Length: 520
Image 1 (cartoon, rainbow, N blue to C red):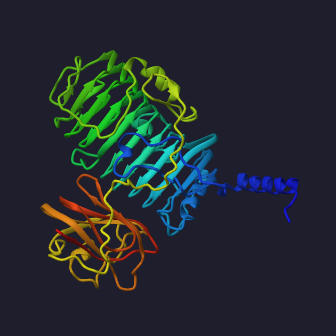
Image 2 (tube, helix red, strand yellow):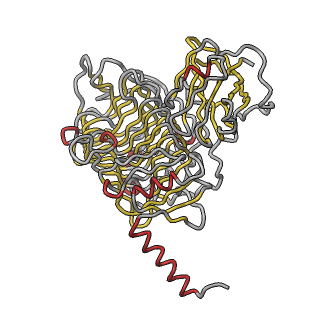
Image 3 (tube, rainbow, N blue to C red):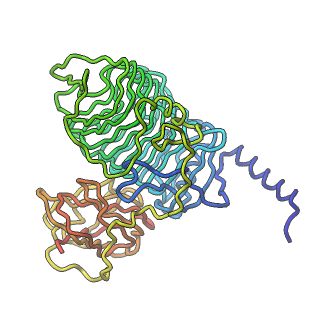
C-alpha cells in the first residue's frame, strides 16, 4: 500500500535535512551528465564523457565527494557527482576503499576513470582546496569555482594549484569554471591550471582565470615534453603575471580567448612546443606571445588575432617575443572541427559565457551566446572507430617471438614487493601489481619496434582480477585497443618505443605476471 503524498513528502524532507547536516551523498533517481559535450582535443583518443551513463549523486562536502568515488563497484564505474555549497578543509577528509585513493587536503581523483564533477543549484565553490587528477582518464569538471589554493602559508593544498594533472592523465574536459587566486607565488599561490608528466587530450573551455602570478603550464621542466594535445578556447585570462599558458613540448590549440592585463608575459611557447593561436583578443598587456625565460625555442602559427594596447620587449638571449608584428614560424594541423568567432567580438562573447554559474552558455561561431547542446546519451566512453581487441581465444598464445623479453619496463606506482621488470622476465611466477586497483605498466625498447598483438597473463590465483584495460602508444598517447579481462589483444601494426597497459578497472589488486608483445 502506498503512503499518502504528505507522508512521503515529510520523509523526503527529513532525508534532505539529514543530508544537509552531514553532507552525505544522495543517490538521484536517474543518471545525469555534464551539459553539452566535450570540445577540442578532449574529443580525441576515444572522447571524454565522464560519468555519463552511470549513477548521479549529490554532495555538499569534500568528504561526500570522496565517499561517492569510494562507493563505486570499481574505479571505472561511471558516476556523476553534483556538488553544491562550499567545499573546504573543514569538511574534506580522506576516505578509503577499493575504488578510490583519496586525501584529506585536496579533492583527489587518483587512479580512477569515468567521473563527472559538476556544480549545481546555488553553485559549488572549492575554497582553498585544489582538485588533483593523477593516473586517471575520462574526467569532466564543470561549473565550479576553485579559489585561493596555497602551496605555502595555511592551509595548503595541491601544491598551490587550483586544478593540477600529472602522471599518465588522459582525456579531461574542464568547462565553465572560475579559477582564481589572490596574488602570486610570494603570497603562497602557484598555478591555476597545470599539466605535467604525460598528460594528454585535455580541453579548458569557457573558463575564467584571474588574479594569479601564474595562469598554468604544460610540462614541469624543459625535459618534461610528454604532455600535449591541449585546447584552450573561450577563456578569460585577467590580471595574470605569466603562463597563459607556458608550453613545454607538445601541441596546443588556443583560440577565441580574451586576455586582459597580462603583466609580464602571456602564451610562452618553448622547448619545442607548437601552438596554433587563432582569433584571440589581447589587450592592455605585455609580451602576449613568444618564447621567454629560456633559449630553447618554441613555435606558433597565428591568424586572426587582435592586439590592443600590447607592448613588446626587445629580443635577447632568453627573450624572443612574437611581436610587434606576430608572424607564424610553424604550421599546426588540428584533427577536430571547430567554429571560430571573429576576434573583434571575443570580449563580448567570453564575458557572456565564461566562468561558473553563467548558465553553461556557449558560442557556435556566430558571435552570439547559445544554450548548450543536449547532453550526449551514448554512455560508452570509447570511440567506435577505435580498434577493438582481437577476438582470438585468450587462451591461445600468439605465435612468434615475445618481444618483451630483454626489453625494459616502468609504470605507475607499484605495490611493495613487486617489480616492473617482472612483467617481461619470462617467469610467470613473478608479477607486478599497482599500488591500488588501477595503474599502468609499460614495456619499452631502445629503438622503434613493430607490435600488433599482446598477451597479458595474470599470476596464479589472481585470474579474473583485471576487469578493463587500455593499450596505449606511450609516445603519442593513442589508444590502440581496449578490452575486458586478461588474455590476447590485437591491433593494426604500429612502430613504437614504449607500449603501456593501463588497467582501468579491477576486482581487488591485479597481478600481471607477463605483459608479452608480438609482431604478429
